[in-house]
Length: 388
Image (cartoon, rainbow, N blue to C red; front, side, top):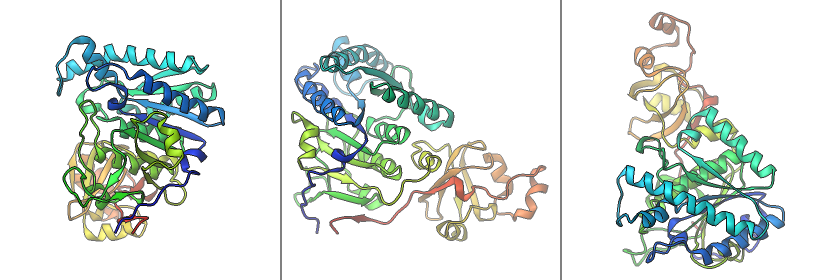
């Protein structure tokens, strides 16, 4: 049985060197009026300025642009068409950036606006460019305020939620800690709105399929991310060696409350973080395709070996050499992600064949491995919480 276990005041948030804080739309925008909740924002800024003064670096990932813009444009409630969302984002982003500028500059802190799309973190070169920009801003003493670039992103190149964006940003910036401030206080074993026996989970030491199954759905009028997206964000963050906290943020001074032991869920990284390259692979939100494998290949991957053509049974989707792909077990479950050494057409030609046959089948000398073990990260895991 899960039991309540308070987090120590000496939490990862207090000890972290570099922190990413994600702010949900339901906190920034009043659900009745559609106006910015400025009084709350000022208390958040006070928390962040206090943390900066003790030597911590801060990155903000902020929702709210669409929610603010739709009110200004007189758009109705509920889901919006893509073009209406982009228009609302264009209008709301100005208001959101201006609010952050005023609130932080009143306390002597410079903020910088950074807009990202999914491709900025999924394509390696753009990922590195974004990382350099963030490090440069932090080095100059500015607080980056990041949002998805909704005005240009199409459905196919969107994160779709700022929870996973925050985790990807933490990975880019090598942050120690991620805090997701939202309208939920943390993870329960089931949806507490429908299950009276649902129990609160204080800590998760491995993100697994069973943990993901505990996640509920979004219940905010303005937000797009529910608990499922927060657990997905946690998987990315902990693989990069960062703690991730899910906490209710509606209270004034929400970060100070967490440091003092307020109820929240901490996702805890295990061991040393992966190399930067493997972090990037594991955190990919949109693999370009999939490679299907047999039981023999699955055993080899579990033993830490590379994926060879002989163990491949099929291909899904279209991908080029160097793209990130999912590795699918015979049971249809994603087991790993890796960088493909061959495009999908070549994979089809050589799958199931021995390494010595590759030159003749391809007409050129390729790599022996379909995915080298240095370019492969296992993403499946066993279930565990610290309370078990």
